[in-house]
Image (cartoon, rainbow, N blue to C red):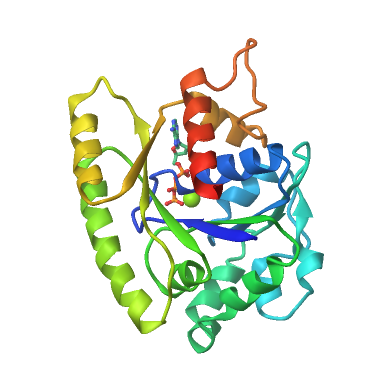
Length: 253
Ligand SMILES: Nc1ncnc2c1ncn2[C@@H]1O[C@H](COP(=O)(O)OP(=O)(O)OP(=O)(O)O)[C@@H](O)[C@H]1O
Ligand SMILES: [Mg+2]
């Protein structure tokens, strides 16, 4: 059965795009028809995987300006991976989320229901914050996974997110699962990182780690899947690949 997973913490720069994009590539490389939906008005996932501006974007779909299939584009060089993009410049998704979305909080849920007929796996990359857009995307998902950085502000952010999610689930009658946390840019040699890991584990979460790896940034600069990026013959560190595989296996099993 098709599954939809979103990655979210209201805090900015914790790796939402990096982890959602990398896992979308991994899922596609494993042979599953995978859709990455760029639900961030910044359009970072789209500028990562597209070399030119798309003709249509997510905001056009939800406003009925085009058909879903007109907006979905295949990601070059990654078989089975498709993108429903957002074009950051112009702020169409941002304008929509600040105006019309208030009247239709289930618009993304309805869209995902349609998309599930065509895709094995759907991954949503969300923007920072916890406004209407992020809430609509979370309730459209079967599971929300929280990426965080190994610092105390992220831990505070996780606590706030847990509290807000409880209210959201009650108000919008959502059953979205939230039981996994990914500590991104983790270095087990650093005591503070281990402390954050232990603190996150106390909250009954299944905790995953992703190490610091410059290949993520470089693959984003070069519009490539991180799994394919190589410089001087070197790609992702074996430790990073292990972490991605572990996460991939857990999410979809
Ligand atoms: N494990 C990592 N190792 C090295 N660099 C990383 C790692 N994860 C993310 N980065 C880099 O950190 C920056 C922020 O990551 P990213 O854009 O994924 O965060 P985000 O949570 O999506 O941000 P935003 O809240 O703005 O959407 C990017 O430049 C990315 O390349
Ligand atoms: Mg992002």
